[in-house]
Structure formats: structure tokens, C-alpha cells
Length: 416
Image 1 (tube, rainbow, N blue to C red):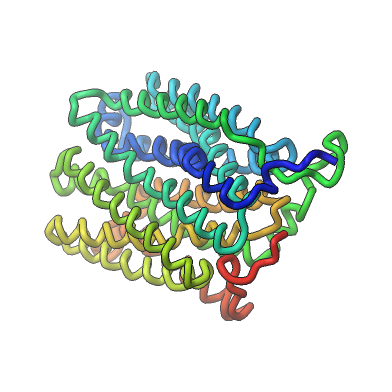
Image 2 (cartoon, rainbow, N blue to C red):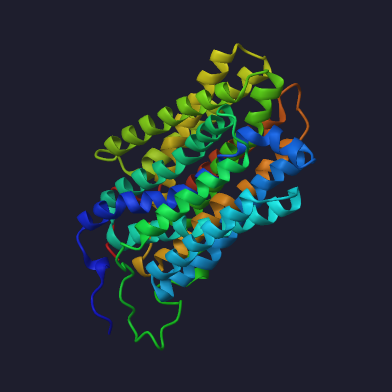
């Protein structure tokens, strides 16, 4: 049998690794949205349409989903560190191709590859968290990790807007992602291997150590939070796909104001993340998730009303900040509940959550450009409300069919 690995280290080991894991999780969502302030510029420079520019966001999201299908089971079989380094190296190469794109088609391909490689960091960071933690410590770990990932799509557009305000072209945004990828690769080289030892020699080991994928897909504690995570993320991606055009075209603001809005959103997410970690000392992650999703729906409805009636921009921004803040409670707790499965299947569980999170989101972005306004409600708001409402319905049906779930993680948990 293999020698004991870092998976048997105390939880403090996970806290020590957290900054690196947050970084490798962060670079994908950052790259996903950092260029959104430049959508009108890309449309003009590459002689394309708004729909095709939005499709480049979809390509990244689709890549993030596909990549996690590949890397999750691979990391369960071969370990976390090697696949992570390969993925980060590929991310740097894909980012270079994004910066050099000569047509919208080449940008779409480059963005797809960037998403596939960036998925490595998200999936493996979540798996490493489950290698090292359980119970409330697991929930707090994911609160920090998912908080960093959730802030990235907010910080990204802020950085992109700053680059545009400085007079640099949109290609420089991808130059920043290249630099971040290099830093992440260098940092990841210091990570230890954390995958639990396999029960059989490596030569005969198969990815089916622990529960198989089909078994995991029948587990309520994984499937329900995966669906909730998927639907809520889709709603938030819809707002990212439409907000640049709404603020800069419909409301006549510039990149600077767009960046300011995302700076406020980042503060809201940081505050929500801090409040969530404190709340986890007293309340189970599953219970927080049960209340935060309906709360997100209420905030989404307020945002929809604000943009429908063309409210003053401060009101629109306030409603947007509240919506992003509510999402800051949903995302980490959905991941924590879903990742409370057996440690031996952490990579596969992370893949299921990742596919759910980014798979449906890859469809919501183009829907913003396809779905017509409904009764005067802008298409962006329609997509957000439908997605978040569906998440509330999933939770309600789960309680009706199965009854209340045990409070895990954050309550009792068998440390598998």
C-alpha cells in the first residue's frame, strides 16, 4: 500500500495551502469575465456581432464544464498535483492564443481551450479541500475558496475596465491572464500531493476507488446542491453577459463606471463571505443554503424591477450589490454540502459540481441575447429570474419528496 499522504494531515495543513488553492481557483473565473467591459470594442475590432462576442463567454463556460469532467476522475486516480500543473501550463498557452486572436472564430476556440484548462484549478482545489477537511472545517474552507472564486468574476471586469481606461486595447486583458497563469503555475509547484492512498497498488488501481460516478449521481446530498449551484450560477452569468451592454449602451456609462459597479459588487461578495464564515460557527451549511436561495430570488426580483422601470442608476447598483451579496451565501454552502461525500471520490464529486455549475451557465449567457423582453422586463432579468426561481423549486421539491436533510457538513458528519 502507498505510504500515507498529506491527506492525513490535520486541517491546519489545508489552511496553509488555502492561498495557493484560492489562486488556482481564481484565475479561471477572472479570465472568464475580465474582458466583458471590452465587448463593444471586440465587436468592432473583430467585425462581428454582439451575439458572437457573448458566445465567447459561452465557450469559456462550456470549457470549464468539459474540463472538470476530464480532470476530476483523473485526479482521483493519478493524484492532484500532476494534473494541476499540466492544466495550468495549458492555461498559459491558451491565454496567449486569446491575446493573439485574429478573428472571432479564433477567439472562440482559444476561449474554449482557456476554459478547459482553467477547470483544472477549480476542480482540484475543491478535491484537495475534501482530502484535508470534514464537517464545519470543510464548510469554512469552501466558504473562503468559493468566495475567492466568486469574487474573481467581479474583480475581472474591474481590471479590464482599468486597462481600457488606461488606453490599452482589449488584448492586454488577456496579457494579464497570461501573467496570472504563470504565477499560479509557479505557486502550484510548491503544493504537496494530498490524494488519499489507494486501497490497491497503483498498477492495478482504477478510478472506481470509493463510490463510482453513477452512485454519486444517486446521492441526494450531491445532486440537490449541484442543481442549486447550477441554476444560481446560470442566473449570475446571465447578468454578466448583459450588464456591459445595459450600462454602457442602454444607460450611456463608460468603462470607468462599469468598473466601479463591479468594485462595489466585489465588496458585497467579500462581506457576504466573511458573514458566512462567522455564521457557520453556529448554523450548518445546509441550513444556510436553504434560506439563502430564496433570499437570492428576492434580491434578483428587486434588480429586475429596477432595470425594468429604468430606475436611477444608484438604485440599480444597490439592487445589483444586494443580489451579488446574496449569491455570496449560496455558492460556498452549495459546494460544501455537495463535497461532503467520501474522500476517495472527491475528484469525481468536484467534477459533478463543476459540470453543473458551468454547464448550464454556458447556456444562460447566449440566452440573454436570444430571449426577448417579456412584458417589458429586459431579457437579462428574465433569464436571472427563471434560473433562480428554478433553484428555489428544486429545494422545495427535495423537501417535499425526501423531507428535511441532516445538517451535514457543519453538523454531524461521518469522516469517511
